[in-house]
Length: 592
Image (tube, rainbow, N blue to C red; front, top):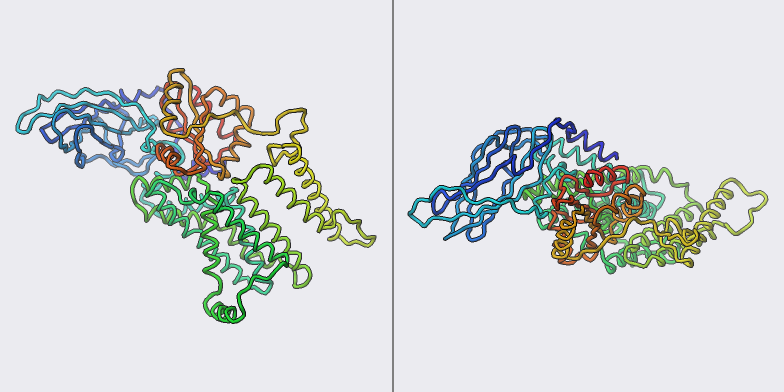
C-alpha cells in the first residue's frame, strides 16, 4: 500500500473520470491506409474530438513487402499524466511509409491513444490489405480494406497504464533529478521487502568477522563497499536485461549455483563456531596484510560479495525495477536506465549502511561475550544458507533444517538445564529464548513427521484432516506460448475471464502472493470465477523466456488479465507483490 501511495504522489496519476463513457478504440481512432505510389503507403487515422494519439507508440510491419522508416508529421507537445512530455496528434494524422513490394501488401499497424476523460487505451493492432500499383502507374486512390487485428498480448502491451509503465514514463520527463530521487525512494521501499532482508546478516557477519577492533569508519567503509558492489551489479545486469529481454539473476536460480553459494555460508559459519580458522599461509598473509593497511584491505572481496548477493540473494522483480527495464528495452537508452537502477540499489542499501555505521556500537566489550556473538552470527549464516536453497529442496527438508536450527541453539542456551539459584537476568533471558526456540523447533519437527505443507503452520495437520496448505485456488500450468493461446481461445469461447500468473520456485514475492494474497477468502472467491493459468518459469528455459517476452516481462512475479471478451486488460497488470486488500479491486474490475 505504501508503494502505491508513493507512486500516486510521484506520478500525479489522475483518478477523476468524466461522466460520459469512452468510445471503443476503433471508433475513437479510425484507421485507413492506401498506396500513394508504387513505393509509398499512407497510413491515416481520423481522431475523434477529445481523443489524441502518441507519436512514439506507432509501430508498423508488413506481410508481402519490406517497410522503410516511417515519416511522421510534427505533433504537439503534451505534458501527459501517464508518459510525461510526449508528442501527440489530434483530429487527424497521416504517416507516409516507404515500401518495397510487388503486388498486395498487408500493413500491420500498432497504435495507442488516450481520452481526455482520463482513460488510456491499450495498444491497438490493426491491419489493412493494400494493392500496390506497378511502377510508373497511378493508384486508384481507394482506401484499403481495414480490419482490427486481435490484441495478442505482445510486448508492446507493456506500454500501458499499469504501475510498471507509469514508472517507465517517469524517464520521459526532462527532470533528471526527479527521476533519480524517485528511484532512490523506490529503493528505500524495496529495502523493506524479503528480497533485501537476507543481505543484512551477510553484511553483519562480515563486519563481526573483522573483529572488535574495527572502527566506526572502517565498518561504514566495509558496508559501503558491499552496497556499491550490489549497486553496480544491479545497474550492469539491469541494462543487460533491458537490452536482451532476460534477467541474468533468473539464470542463476538453479540448484548448483544456489547450493554453491549456500556452501560458502556454511563454511563461514563453521569457522565462527570455532571448528577451524580461515586464513592464508603466514607468508602470503603478511604480504596481503601490508597491502590491506595501505589500500583499504579486503574491500574488493566485500564488493564482490555484494555483487553476488545482488545476483543470487535478491532476484525479485518489483514494479520500479520492471519499469526501468521496460524503458531500457523500449528506447535502448542504457545510460539513464542504468543510472536509475544504480540509484535504486543505493536506496535499497541505505539500511545496510546503517548496519555498518552502528554495528560496532552494538557489539559488547572484548571478552567471553564476543564468542557468543560470533556463534550467533554463525547461526544466522546457517539460516541464510538454508533460506538460499529452500526453493530447490523438498519442503520436508526445509522444515527439518529449520527445526535443527532452532533446537540445537536452544540446547546451547541451556533450555533443558535447570537455572542456578543465583542466576542473573541475562541467564534467565537466555534460557527464556532457548525455551521458545526449543518449542518452535519441536513444533517444526512434529510438522515434518505429520506431513505439514506450510512451514508457518507446522501443526496445521492436526486440524481434523483440514489441509495444512494455505494456498488459494488451483492453477492450470501452461508451458508454451502455443498452449497459452489454446487456453485463451477456449476461455474466450466460453465467455470466461482469464488470469495468468508468472511464477518461479526461487521467487520470494511469488510465494508471498500464494500464501497471503491468493489464500485470502475474498480474493479466492473472485479468482474462482476466472480461468486460472500459471506459467512456471523456474527453469528459465527457452519456452519460459518466450512466454515472458510475449508480455514484455523480465521475470516473476507478474499477473496478466483478459476480460470475458478475450481482450487483455493491460492497464490492470500486476508486477511485484500485492496484498489481498490491494489485489481484490483489480479482480473486481476484471470481472465487471
